[in-house]
Amino acid sequence: MRAEVQRLLLSYIAEEWRTLPQSSPTPWGAWIRLYPVVADSSDNPLHRWPVPVSAWFLDRRGISRKSVWEYRRYVVVQFEKPWCRRPCGEPGHTSSRFLEIGQAAFAPRPIDNEFYVETLWGGLYGEGRLVEVGPGGVRKKERLWVA
Image (tube, rainbow, N blue to C red; front, side):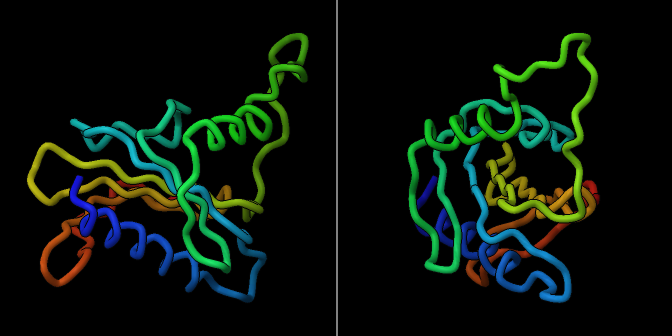
């Protein structure tokens, strides 16, 4: 992926995070991940926890590149919790209106300049979409899902 396209997509996600409504609790930071090509727009990287190609962390200081293993460690500690399994597989309480740390991901599509982007700022506040990156920046093409 070209560095300029990557920069535009990271800025697009960061701008969405910065403009979240301040009237509700919002995530104080967000993990942003890059995945390999997503062939079908129904493939949703957020519902699985594969190791991404690249990872960044966004907070009020800006975007900083992180090791993909730092992100993977975050997932294990915050979501998978292998040391705290319920004996009969009962679900734990994990949903809330907003997350303390948001989740965002993007992946190229087989179509030139088209990308799958998803953001999840809380249990009921997220969106998956197809975007197009061109000379004018990032343009939303189609909403695929909303939470």
